[in-house]
Amino acid sequence: MSYPNLMSNPRKIFSQIYDRYINKIYRFIFLKVNSQEIAQDLTSETFLRGWESFKSGNKIENPQAFLYKIARNLVTDHYREKGKARIISAEYVKITDPRTNLEEKALLNSDLDNVKAALTNLKEDYQNVIIWRYLDDLPIPEIAKIMDKSEEATRVQLHRALKALKNELK
Amino acid sequence: MMTEKELIGKVRELRQIRPRKDWVVLTKSQILGEEPKILFFPFFKPALATVTTLGILFGIFSLAQNSLPGDILYQIKKITEKSQAVFVSEEELPKYNLEIANKRLEELTKIAQTNQVQKMAPAIEEFQANVSETAKNLVKVKKVDEEIVENTKKLEENKERVEKVLATKIETDEYDQALAQLVESQIKDLEGGTLTEVQQGLLEEAKEDFETGNYSQALEKILILSYQ
Image (tube, rainbow over all chains, first blue to last red; front, side):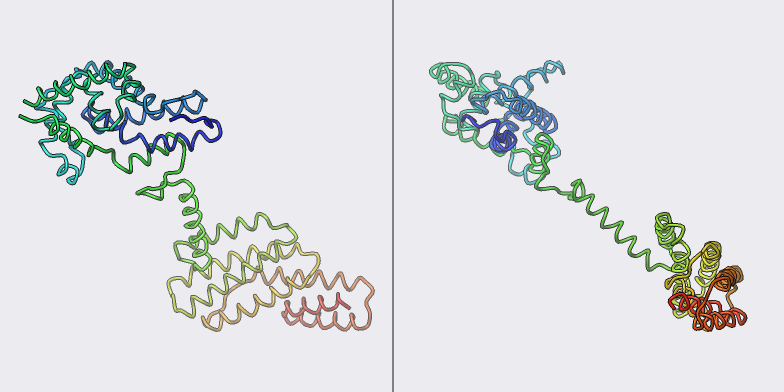
């Protein structure tokens, strides 16, 4: 997805990018930080940085890859700043934020909490490839671009990631 | 043992994780500097807030215009009148004062008719203060015009009506003296000039009115005289 007429109406174009990717980026971050508040902060920061770069005229060939790159860097910075361990024990990881409403709580049952916890326990590359392939439904070539790997290496990565997840859920 | 398909199915269920819709809308507006389309508190919209504030102020001012002495909004009415007076020229000020004095008498009539006893005293005080202000400016009038004549006559009629309703006399000595002074100075000016026979007749009538204390009538004659 490219935006050749970037300067014609950047606000409108970025507005469409925002609408298209906000849920994905939020989910991607939420699955890593386990907090609605932090996920909101980092997601808004992701789009703010994206918008600043976009409006300054930087050519962005792949907005999705671009936003994911910002999001990943922000998550890394977040853990670095806080000195927090990225791996959080499954016992403490609840998918539902304490402030989410009852409807959301009903939807996200304990079974899902387990999957979420298992996913969180995986190393970052495995988490990412699973999220992109099975939650975002991105094709392998697209994931390969984001990860800056070959398609074959991406397929291998995905296979290993699934195996690791299955082991976590044993 | 979970199959790969089952595992992927479980992972896909994590799609239920979504940000709050209101947060999505607000964040977008903050980042792009746009007006959010959906807001739970529409009063936070600056444009709407301005319109609402102006609407409320307009409503208050409109209500204040119908308020009576002793009402909460009456002070706003007085402030509005005083603010308007700032933009009135010195020459026009006596007319403006007369208009306001008449308004005070209309308020008094309304109070008397609706039997709002507790508002009676403040309303009389308001009228007397206003009519005293009118007196100060009335003596400065150089040329009598229709508006002055009309308003002085109206004030006299209104005052008589109120006194009848209240069955009491409202003292306006200062105003009466100022009006007398105005009539007297106008008569003196006319006596020093050349008048036609008709004008002379009208001047004589005005003098008689003056002698009997009918000052507004005397002013009317002086006005008619100036048209001859």
